[in-house]
Length: 442
Image (cartoon, rainbow, N blue to C red):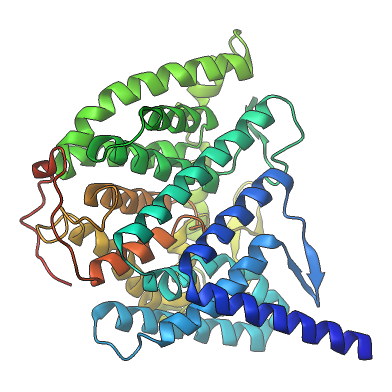
């Protein structure tokens, strides 16, 4: 008994110390978050049982950052601003749903599902309060590019045949008769898409080493090889948006896309061989709509549930409620995740919570490229890059839930928009951002 109490005291002391340092240094928290995610992708979740909860390194880091985020957010509550009202209201609605779930289903089931919303909470509580000086933001972005390179390294080691990357249970996911060797999960592929956007923005608008110019090609080629169609669609939407947001990036996309396609071709030949397998892989990824149809059917079943009440529509069902829908293939009710950030939010926080989070999510897109922010020295490497990252996240959320390694960018973008000191910088083609007619201000 004494030993248990001593271990508990030590654990609480360590937790309090780590929380304190994380609350004082957001970059430290960011580095730990990214490192834990790479470790999880490379070597599996490595879960440990704490009480009745199964926690892996990412969960541990997330819990520490949530506590640190509560500390940081409490310091800015008294300041006026739309973000703080939106953020506080969303958090209250979410915790109302979480507490209801704990009372009905128990602490463990509700907490296990609640962890899937950690990214959203961290974005609001922790990363939206990051210091917004130019040095900090540059370090934030550079750390993510290094993180992206580490993920590419994990994928290459997997394709070389090493026992790495086992955290993704569907590395060889069967779709019909096609076996797809996806070395990274969709959340990691979205991270590579964000790295692609930031690296091409850096090459376009900032000076750097010549090796930096290779990064967009490497990230783009790996994204094609991984065959996550949602990521393809998100980047296509970004590409179609660039002529209206930043014509300099739009022009650079052409040669980068060509070289990335060539790299993806050689990678596909290396991974799948020179027979028809590679062709079948990418043809299936480009044309197979079976997964999309099944997801739409799932969304329909979850949205139009017979047990819907006014409270569930407005504030959602308690966290931990089984997500059941009628499966026409089996003829029975099955539990199936929604596979959509927006459907998940509607189910758990209702229309009120969904609208609040959409305001938080979409607001940066309409403000980042206004006259006030488009030439800001704080928005490294460029305001347009941050805008495109926000657009890619919005598209990604249609078919997947946000991961805590990506959604923090919306929080940081919000912090940048709220900060002062947006003096102009001399970009190579800063006049190419053409959304200045949008309404300015926060």
